[in-house]
Image 1 (tube, rainbow, N blue to C red):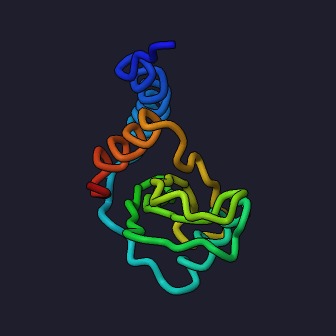
Image 2 (cartoon, rainbow, N blue to C red; image 1 turned 180 degrees about the vertical axis):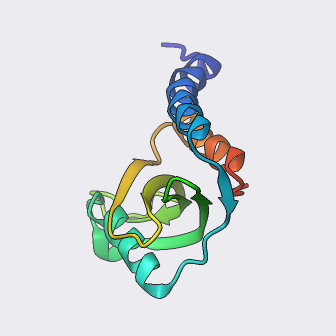
Length: 131
């Protein structure tokens, strides 16, 4: 079975872009937010709660973008073990929280190549470079 990667990429990217562009209409980018150890702990907890082996999680390149509506978007990479005990490789993630991270919601972690490309693209559009 052949897979049309550009079509899959568009299928994921378009909803992500629509969601973020709608939010962008109501908010202004303020710049990167300095992430404290407490913020990073809350982000990591949100990510690891969705992993099969949370103890194995290794994080890389966690970045943030602060917005005028009180939200902060966070992007980065996580690598964790799968069901067979092997590391799957770095996968991008994206999540949204309040400025103080009293609330944080993981939007997406990894997935297909197209999904990972879409996450990296959306993060880049809001000034979080994962490339």
